[in-house]
Length: 199
Image (cartoon, rainbow, N blue to C red; front, side, top):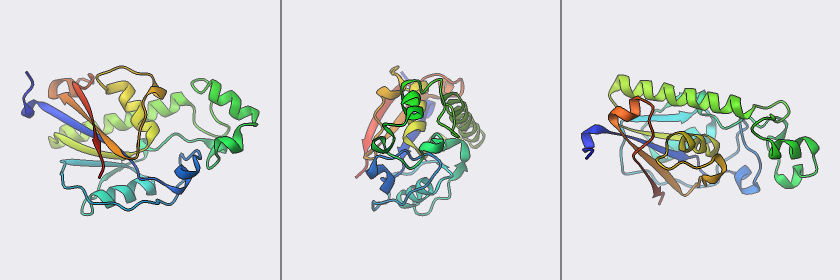
């Protein structure tokens, strides 16, 4: 049995809904205005990490007004290159787009980031955060990042194995991964995953 002193919690939260999200546009390294109001969280964490993009930093500020998070460029969403800011409807007849969505693991968007580059970058972000947690003896950390980043973390660390696109990452909840302390710092999977509604 794992006792609370022997666990590490990573809370993964998607940034608030943006105008581009409402349009269902590809939103990677480009920013878009938030279109939601935030109620501060009552729960507290030891460490706070955020993508360095404005929509994540503003979301963190909304949930934790007095927190200055550690900003990590590595926690950015995938760079969609020429597809940034465009929706499926706007791209569906573009052959480069059709090639990419059918072979996204091997083809990069024009002037964008390959899936392999994206995975390597966000896993580096995870490593940087875990090193900070170990150095500071933090047991509970909160991340504000992007849907694609959270999907990749769940692929790598959730207790149940699923493919990348099988994880549905909502704006309406955040995801708490609980690890045994030993397993966490050894890079093992979490022992539990819960979805916590954002109210």
